[in-house]
Image (cartoon, rainbow, N blue to C red):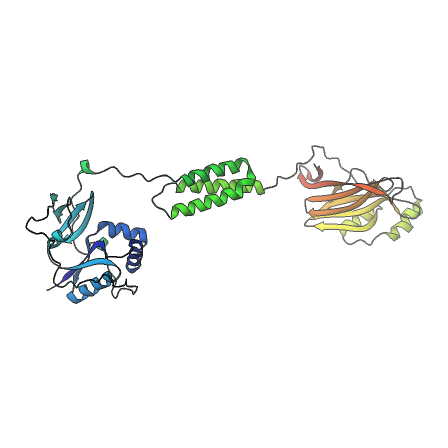
Length: 401
């Protein structure tokens, strides 16, 4: 049966851009660019298809030429050979194509053989042997084809051509592997990340620089330093986390003093305190307010709840007209009274409880104003931070510095 094989020489047609041709070829073979160059072009010349009908072989060769590469059709069924060029094995190829593709200094061996032979051009031939008669002439002005292949090309990675492995290369002639250069950008990114670890405001710039370096290196496989760039990214992220993290304020070192409820001050007559004043207090809204009323406190109506914490303002002392003389903040957690926010109640004669804000269920901000003899004239303000925290015997209060 008259069958043909398709050979890719690895040479480009005149006027073709290598990068563009490789991209078109890789897309036609359905391969990544790096894998295509390693498995195909670095091994050319080589057979990429065997057992083709003459018309199919010529059609596929024409398609490859339209992409900008040199492709030849050779009779199939001949004995195969391997070429060794620049200490790299190429092929396999039909034995009759040796003179066509071999170059000065190449070595060759039969498929399955164990010995390499130096190739020298025949002295009687001034020109390389002509291509098989079936090959059509290629015009250099033919634009590269962008159409998909009519029939997918199968690479010889699966050994569909039934060739054996070539003999091993001589160990003495094997050159030392070329060491890839190390990227200075990776070193600079790592040093900048370490600097950001010492001075945290540099961390955003360090992270951006490390990411750009990593992208730069992945686009350039011939440079080393990807691992260093990854480390620079991680260090920069850690420095950024440290910079954004605001350390919690430390609690003042002070023992917790229980502040139990005490009866309402009897500075006013008992009848006033127990009857008239209690009738004027704000209506209780929950169990915590009712608990305060049992201690004869007058609710002002100001209270806040965040999560499991509840803070209510109440008067601990009144005058004859049932007006508050002193105010205190009472803190509850999970419905249980855990203490007062202030060591002593604020007396309107010298201190005014201006405002309080329950930031969350564990932080209370209290604003106090210092007053003169007249309660209306209050000037400088003081802000105190109170923390609701778990203690050995339950939840307690502590001032934050």
